[in-house]
Image 1: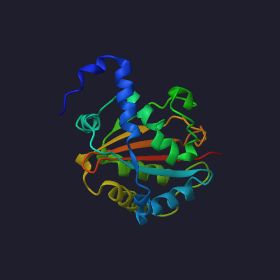
Image 2 (image 1 turned 180 degrees about the horizontal axis):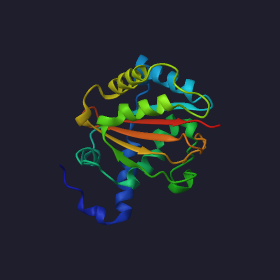
Image 3 (image 1 turned 135 degrees about the horizontal axis):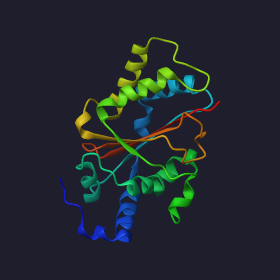
Image 4 (image 1 turned 120 degrees about the horizontal axis):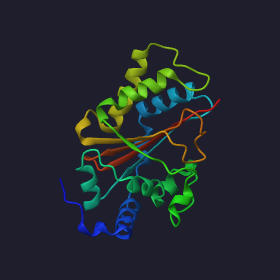
Length: 207
């Protein structure tokens, strides 16, 4: 595990380091055309009839701070994830979330999202439950095992079966106007330490 930089004892320096790190992300739209990702989004749309799913992927160049985050089990630096969602690459490529700027970062959010660590080993099961239960008006109308396979294949398309290389953070907060702010809002930030990728998945529905 890498050592945390001593200068982070000063909050301003920590903020700047995080901002510089997330602003260096490269968007990987090409990875979103995978058939398992498209199928998962289509299935979510069927049960979240008044909402749906949004997914984006970014890649990080060599960065010591990013390596530190990915080497730290259950990393809980809330500020880092907030800055990620207000970063230039995210704002410019995930336009549906309508994040305006990063000058006054916390003004971007209806509510500042709070993330909790989730084991990568249970991610496909968690998504399966959301899919089977469905949204406001629709339920998954086939066997739960089919929903499970859809979610397993979706996760495999993101990080194969390399669960130990992945960290997942989850929030059910209503932090953007893209969400409906009812009972079906979910955001997942998925870090892949091997491929240096960040996946952001969001789901929403309303009655």
